Length: 81
Image (cartoon, rainbow, N blue to C red; front, side):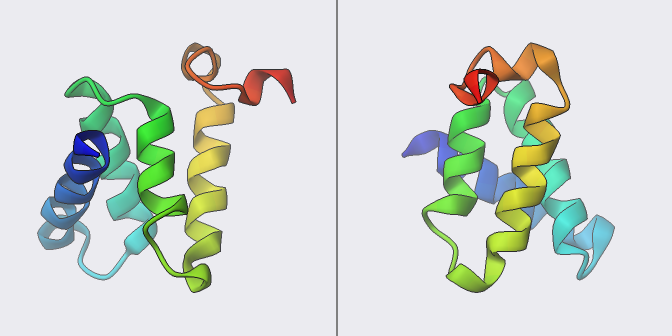
């Protein structure tokens, strides 16, 4: 999906800035992808569906970021949980 590709591209762009801090690169990618019109769900999907199981902590961290921002939860079903 194009939105997932955009998220991943921004993640890689974040590496020269944040070096090996994958969490910081994910957050950088998340906010830039949102500004580029990608939905929070597709950003989440980019990590949840395309990364190995060993990256589950990153998926959880991104989910928490979305849930902490009420203006973003309206784009997911997470607000019903």
